[in-house]
Structures are given as structure tokens and as C-alpha cells.
Image 1 (cartoon, rainbow, N blue to C red):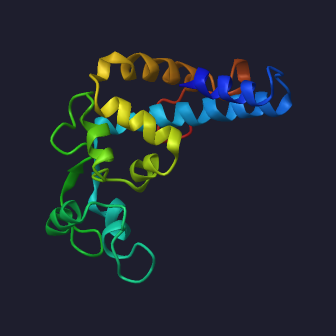
Image 2: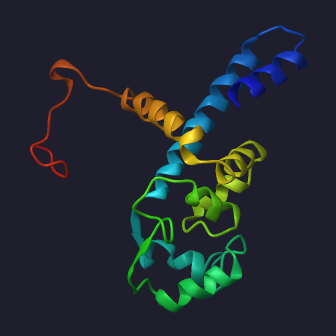
Length: 174
């Protein structure tokens, strides 16, 4: 996918890799990493409070997010009451303990729980990746790609020497 973006830009520029091309390449790689890391929503849970506005007040007019499948929205409203009361919800309904392609299938069907999940369908490149992952086994590319992105993210803002500290309890500064 990244190579196709670079190839398309390069062909537009007749083979000349200028600053704009490099900027587009860096941007597309960042988008690709964010897309991959969104796939982590295949595992885990959230609360009704987190999706409350999406169900009951998306634009501030007591409405539901139109990007959410209406049947799915009705199911969620039975579980989640206005104001955010309700049970813990699986991020990947029915498959939240396994890393698999089900998350991408749900997103493709407008059944992504979070607004950020729905946003994956707003861009042609991310939509194409969601489609590809939803129709192929997760281990085909996602697992490997996700691992690489996690390693890359692990190198962001690393503090060394006396610049940082190892916390005894993660939520609190020592």
C-alpha cells in the first residue's frame, strides 16, 4: 500500500522525488501506522459512557451518528442508557478476546463502536485497507504490519539516561 502511494506520486512527478513527494510519503506512512494501530480495537472493551454522544447526541441535537448502522445503534441503545449508564462493551463485538479480521468486517459494515473506527471509512486509502483486511485472514498482513508499527511507536519520545524514570506504579510519577 505505501509503495503504491509513493509510485503514484513519483509517476505524477515524472520520477522526480522532490520535497513534496517526501512529505506525502512521510504523511502516508503515518496514516498507515495509525490505521494499523486502530486494529488493536480487535481486542478489549469500552464503556457506554465513551459512546454515549455517538448514540444520543452526535451533533448536539439529540441524534445518533449517521455513520453507525441503524440496527447496531438500536442494539447498543438497549444496552447503553442516555448519560452513559450501562455495561462494559466489547470493542469488537463477539470477538474481543482474539486478534482477528472480525474488527475490520464490523467496521466495514458500519458497526465499529468508536468514532475513530468509523473514521477509517472516510479516506479512500484507509477504506481500501479495511476492505482488504475484512476479506482476508488477519495473519495475512495485519499481524506482521501491526507488530512493525508497535515497534516503531515504541521509539517515539524515548527518554534515556537521567531524562526520565521508570515508574513504580504507571499511573503515578515517583
